[in-house]
Structures are given as structure tokens and as C-alpha cells.
Length: 629
Image 1: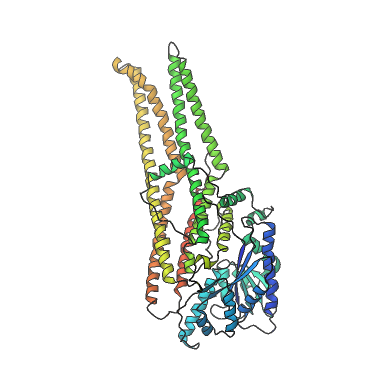
Image 2: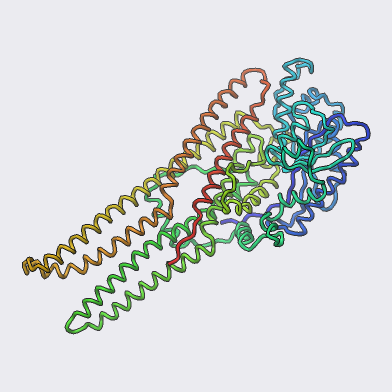
């Protein structure tokens, strides 16, 4: 496993503001201390708890449309107020190419707009084919612009962690400040609201707070939500401990970035051998995320496979050794009985008994120590933690093509403590994604902006994401159903065999007691009887072990779960097919009022939610400890 670099601390700020500001707004003067407060809050996280971060200087990015008025004032103030505490950069999300944007807005200060555009770390154009021959008063032109500005606001929020909204309380136009604020709150994004001209600054977390104008005072609230986004999990702080990582969390972070090579243990090989017996030949092609993310995804996958193999190999080998221990115990009894009933005891048999006893002791000690090690080192929990992280990073193989760099949270509510505690993995996941420059994840042609294409995004999502997930879950459903069926059938056969052996043993005893067996049969039968006892003792232990493997591996429930995922994914595939056809038709006509990249974005987010929800629930249901003897 290759080591991966720790991410830099990064915070992305979306900005939405009025084009026309009221007299006396002094927006630059009010934004400068606000940006300073945010930067100080980030610096507080750096000083108090770097957690999983590198030593690189923190990076703040302000993302806007660089429109007239507040956007341009904010971008200028943000860059001019740079300090040595953090690196500052601006980025632009444009609904059209710059020329069409200046025409559609219309842009009063196009020169300032282009100067800021040249300083942007990245620029994204959502519709480079916009018609420029539509006058501003034309009804079709209004529809096109309204759809484009709404799409611009939607995408901007998918590139940010916080929204800074500057407004005067008026309703505004499509894609305007108040509409963007409501959309941000709807996806769980905190909003810093600056009302002009009075300069009141509040932090709003919910739509109710927004409607009631009941936000929290800016200073402490900004420090609070920046810590929530960047620092250690809130559960540690709520318990009154230092706002750092506790031992288990720190161990996970250290291991993830450690990259040390470890030899695969025999129990891992045993589980892989056992599992391969039920899997179809061939492999499911793996996804490949953009280069800034792919190394982290491979690392998470490797650690997931390691701990899943350790955990499952431990209980599989443990149940096998439990049967072996019972076998050794019964053999010891048989040897002891035969030796004690002999006229002249064979003292070599005591060495045999000693060897059997030592072997049985070794098996029991191994089972106990292995189970204790698995529980102490949290192999089951680590397996699901790393799978959750890998699945989250998998979303970044497809969401960037749909213009999104803010993966959605899973749908499930944290009813289980296990899911709540997994917030450490959520935070690590978002820290890895947050540091990525979209221009590196979706590199445009030299000197060109990023131009997401709906047709390409939908094709990649359908053939790659949905297609590979369907192949994976079909393969898993088949393998787990086959494993569960085989274990159940073998258990049933052994149960019947137990009954048959016990009945045969009882029959020999009854016939022997009645003295009805001929001597030619009676004597061999008496010699066979101890071995029948041996088999009768071993088979129930084997049945119990098979049932234990079925329970611990959750093969039946995993098969059912994959079948359910297949049904959901097939529904999403039908939706993707409809969208693909709609995009193809739209490409033969003038640009429609709706930008289909938003449809691709929402499709990708729905798939991401389903995938992350499946893993989040899986982590709560299947992360259980091994029973120690």
C-alpha cells in the first residue's frame, strides 16, 4: 500500500450579492473584516488541532460569478486583503462564455470583470453555446437567462462549504441572492448574511432562522462553524475533552496516511480462498477518480480489503479451529477410555493424550487471542470505515464531470451511534475533496475554462458508475446467495447425519444389551461404537460452526441488500437513459431554457446518496465484534 499525502487545510466560500447596492453600503469596508474573521477562525483550527492536515499554509477560495456590483467588489477586497496567514484565491462560475455573459447580464464594468477573470484559479462555463442574438426584452431570452443564472447558483454551491450572501432584503431575480441563500440552506450549507446598508452580519444554519431573521451573531458563530467543518468531530468537544482526535481516531488517521507495507496474514488468504469458491470468474472493472483523488481512493480500498479479510478470515478460521478443538477433545476421551479399560495400560498413550491436549489448548488460545485482537483493534469497524471512505471518494470519479465538487451526505438519519461516530471519516473525506482544485480534477485545454458537458457526464455516469455498480451488486448477490445456500445445505446434511449416527449408536447399544447380535457382528460393533460417539460429537459442533459462519458473514442479508441495490440502480439507469435521450435531442436544436448539466448533476447526486446511504447503514448493521471463548 502506497503512502498518501495529508491534505492542506482548505475552505471554499461561495459569494452571492446584489448588482446594485444602496447608497452608503461601503461593501468593501464591511467585507474586509469579515474575511479577516473567517481567516482567523481557520488559523484557530491550525493552532489548536491540525488533525489530519499537512503543514502547508491554509487556502481560502472565494467563488462567485464576478458580476457587476457586490461580486466584483468582494473579489477585489478578498484578494487585496491577503495576509501571510492563508493563501487566497478567487474562482468564477459563469452561466455562459465571457462575451455572452457580458451581453446577457449586461455587464457595466466588463474591463474589471475580465481583469478579475484573468486572476481566477479556475473558471467554469456552464453553457458555451448560448445564443447571443436574443434581446434582453425577448421572452425566450428571459427564460434562457433565468435558467442559466439558476444553474450558475446551483453549481456555485456545489463548489463551496459556506455561502456569503449580501442583500438588502428584496426578493431579487432568478438565481439571485435570496434564492441562492434558500438553496444553500436546503442542502445544509451555513450562510453568512450581510445586510446592507446597515451592515448587520449573522450566521444562519436553517431555513427557519432565515425566514425569522434569527441568525446568530457573526463572530463566535463563524469560529464555531469553521471548527465544525475543519476541526475534530463535535462529539469530542461536546464531551468536554480537548478538541482533538481521540486515540482511535488518531490511529485511523495515522494509518491512512502512513502507507506502511504489511504482509498478508494466512487468515486473509483463507477467507479469500473461501469466498472465491462462490464468486463467478472475471472481475468488475474498477472506477478511476481524478488524479488528486485517485491515490486516496486506492488507499482506502486497500485498507478496506485488508481489514475485511482479517475480520472475516479470523471468524472463519476460528470456527474451523473450534470444530478441531472438539475433535481433539473427543479423541482424547476415546484414547483415555481405551487405555484405562486395557488390562495393561499403554504408557505411550499418555504421550498421545499430552499431544492432543496441547493441540487443543493451542486452538483455544488462538481463538481467544485472535478474537480479542480483532475486537481490540476494531477490524470490523475499520473495514466499514474504510469502505465508507472509499465509496465516498468513488463519487468523485463522476460528480466533477457533472460540475459538482461537493458530494451530498447520505440519506439515512444517524439513529445508530456507529453512524454518528463515523463522522471522523466524513470529515476526512470532505477534507480530501475540499483541497482539490477543479482545474486539476477536470483539466481543460490550455488557456481554456472548464466546460462540463451534459452528454459526456450522463454517458460516464450511466456506463461507468451505474453500470459498474450494477455489475458489482449482481456479482455480490450471486456470490453471497451461493455462499449462504451452500452453508445452509451442508448444515442440513450434517444435521441429518447426526441423527442417523446417534440412531445407529443407540441401535447397537439396544441390540447389544438384548444379546441378539451374532458374535461376528457384535464384536466389530462394539469397536465401532466409540467412533460413532466421536462422529456424533463432532457433527453438532460442525453444524454450529457453519451457522456461526452464516451469521457472522451476513451472506444472506448481503445478498438481499445487493438485490435491493440492483432494483434501485436499475431505476436510476432508466432515468439516465431518458436524460441521455433528452440531451441528444436538445443538441440538434437551439439551446433550450434548461441547462441539462443541472439534470446530470442531480442524477449524480442521487446516485451518490444511494451509494453512501447503503454503506452508512451497512456500517451500523454489520460492524460487530467477535465472540471471545
